[in-house]
Structure formats: C-alpha cells, structure tokens
Image (cartoon, rainbow, N blue to C red; front, side):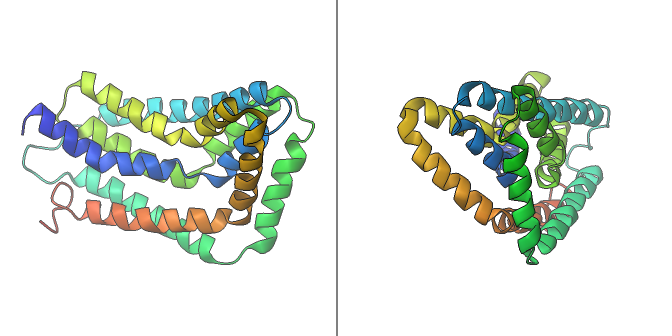
Length: 234
C-alpha cells in the first residue's frame, strides 16, 4: 500500500471513533447551559478550554505512550491492537448495559448537580467542571484509546500522523465548540434552540450514551477480530 491508501484506510477506521467520542451528554449539557446564559462568551470559552485541556492532555499522553511500542510486522496481525480494540469493546459494552438499566434518580441528580453548581459560579468553575467531566468521560476515552493507537501504529510518516490525531481531537471537541458558534450566529434567537436541546439532552442523556456505547462496542469488536488485528476474519 502507498501512503495515500494507508492514510485513507486509517481515517476510515478512526473517524467513526472520534465522532462517537464527541457524544458526551453531560459535557454538551454544560456547554448548552453556559452558552444560553448572560455571560455566555467567557463561560463558553471556559468550558471549551477546560474540556480541550483535558482531551489534549489525554491525546498527548496516549500518543507518547503508544509511540514507544513497536509497530506490527508488515502483513502480520497486530496483537497489541487487537487487545486494545477488544478492551475498548468490553468497556463500552459494560457501559451500555449499565446505562440501559433505568436510573431515574441518578439522571435527575446529575442534572441538578449540573445546574446548581454553575448557577452562580465564577468563570474558573466552568473551566474546572468541564475539565473534570472530560477526564471522567469513560466512553469517550474508550474510543480515543484505540483511535490514537491505530494512528501511532499506522505505517504512515509522523507528518501525517500528527494531523490525523489533531482531526480526532477536533471531532471529539464538537460538543463544546458548536453551541457557542450557534449562539454567535443566531444571537439571542439562538437561545430558544439551545434551551430546547439542553432539555432534550438532559431528559435522554443515559439513552443517548447507551446507544452510542452499544454501537461502538460492536464496532470495536468487529475491528478487533478483523484482518488487521487478531485476523480471525478476513
């Protein structure tokens, strides 16, 4: 395979994971709440910066760690990759099962904790809260780990690997980037849509995350047994 084919194959595998990692209802809810407030500019920037710092730190550490691993032999199964994808599948499946069990009180408490903590919070609190929510986001990291491992294990030069990791990072940041852009474009009129989206996100946060976790658990499992990892299927 040449560099172009390798890069395209890599993107096809990791972009779905990056999109899946962006589905974080609690983080989206925080940004929607921030963006629809009176001090929306500084608050939404604080949320984006807090979340961005957490994901950037994770991406740097994962990239540095996986880069030290030996690349799989050419035309041979990637056993390490198979293990990484399999573990991601197991984690996501476990999360999905837990989320599909009704937790009405927990969902309500999660929303109350979100709204009460930031009702009169300072700007730095928005940063800290977004950072904490991002660091504790198990489903997003379960998808970012195999994505970044795939990039570092790919037979493409570093100057293609870095933009690919940057693309994964940007896609994972979509929940905290789009709401302020929408508010900037729509102004006060955009608050109606932001408030409705917040309500829907909070009312269905466990279901949304459960469906995403189930879909990507299957996706990771299929990749793990595919021709490039354990090679159990061709």
